[in-house]
Amino acid sequence: MRIIAGKHKGRTLATLAGLNTRPMMDRMKESVFNIIGPFFEGQEVLDLFGGSGALSLEAISRGAKSSHIVDASKAAVDIIRENVKNLHEEDKVLIHLMDYERALAQFKSHKLVFDIIFLDPPYQMAIMDQIITFLLKESMIADGGNIICQYQKNSYVPKEYEGLRIIKNYTYAISEITIYEFQRK
Image (tube, rainbow, N blue to C red):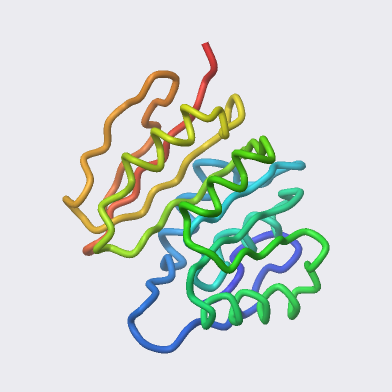
């Protein structure tokens, strides 16, 4: 896996061995960033199921200001730390070893608001709607911000929420991606 564009273009990222994480394929990642970017200027990123941190690090490479990367797996967090260190981005990335519910509660208490939110939970967790509803209710997504959801095809039915519209939905093999954009009324 590699960084596709920006200041770290071409740099290789470490990934976890085995099938516990599914990094977004380069072709998928490129499509997502072409839709939401392709480059940024000062955005705040949340990667709620970080895996290797590749999505956040791609956003940082393309100009995002900072990122919070969350993962409940110590092995995943170790890989994220290695990738962040290898790219010398320790000052822009905050890594959280905890489950998504605890992380969201902390971010809520600190009144954090994000411009780009990556949601790529393990396929067996049917929680996309629950998380999106929470983010909207707690005003954690910035006006004009994006939520990028990756999930197993047919495991989530994309829908529009108040202020949150679907700007793209597509399928790659067994994965489906929905990209939302938030517009405050």
